[in-house]
Length: 223
Image (cartoon, rainbow, N blue to C red; front, top):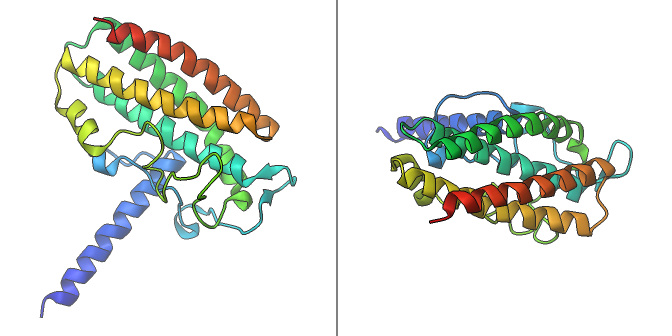
């Protein structure tokens, strides 16, 4: 007799989770979330975000391709997760000064970059593929981009949440290093193709930034 009520509750929970995920991609604060809830939806619905999929491979000026859109979407996921991880570290007490400074700088840089990426994400919606790509620069990322190279698993991220200094700094640096490598791989593939000029400029800037961050992270991980 209780089955209809149970189904309704589950449906409401799924809808709420999807809405929160969509807002995360578009930059709308949705409050604190656990590692399992922190990965935003890769494909916000038209009802939730006003973004619709198209079978057309181009958008607006016929030079934005599905790969361009995929790059923007993937980088949003990387930067959102990167910012969340940095904030996780910054909420802890006793964090080493060099690790804290790196995390603070990273949050500021991510917020600035995300502003531009989210504008493209909305404006280039007509180039969005109907299905998650199976090949190309973003092939194999999964429907929610959780399979992107370098993205931390739930257990790895939970380990950072539970850790205290100085273990927290090392865990954070290890996660950031791996995510950094994943972003470099994506950016390299994008630059090997024929990206939109805006995407090329973004990718080149991201590559330069990741190289600099890699040096800092190596220092944080040094014995």
